[in-house]
Length: 246
Image 1: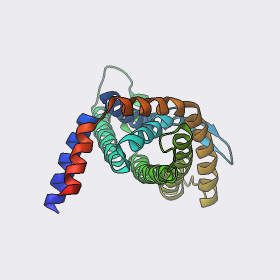
Image 2: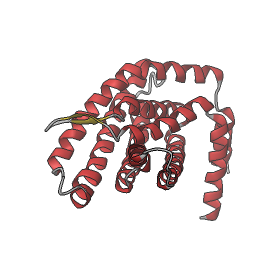
Image 3: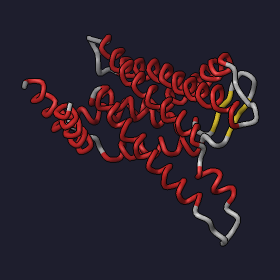
Image 4: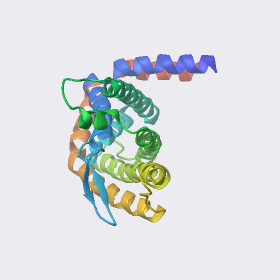
């Protein structure tokens, strides 16, 4: 177990040096922003509910799709865990700032937003980790079906669209199930969603987020093509090859 963990840590360090810093940074920032923007509901109907996180969630999945295509699903999952860890650390700092008293002004609204709600953070963290695992695994599996032209535009678009839809559906469903179905009735004066409402809103939300993926996926495709031409991450691939030959 210790040997396996040490290998994973070493692999992760090499991976962080291999992936262009811009992508890793945007990934982490998008996860943090999703957590903050989710505090504002943009649309709330009986059959659909969208929060501000939808405006940035596409970037998280775009980064995962890019990393999965070039480095593989394991690498993308490791970076997803890395982004979640940064988000949790950021939320802790925000919480500490929110509980520090101040007489300079009325910071009630600031404290409410940045202080966060523990079960919302729990729901978003669990939902994102599960959806990331599904998205990365499914993305890679679909890519394996395109044996003749695995690096073609069609292959890239199909693996991104399908994996994003199912990943986003799972993210929305697990989050709403944990927050609105389980914890909300306990802490929000009986407010709750039924399982059917969770499913419906997860589905409609996934469709809306898929449209964002369709809009921005051509950017991801061009990035993966450039990475391949420039042999980005060769040190990571060499390490994986060496470990496989041992």
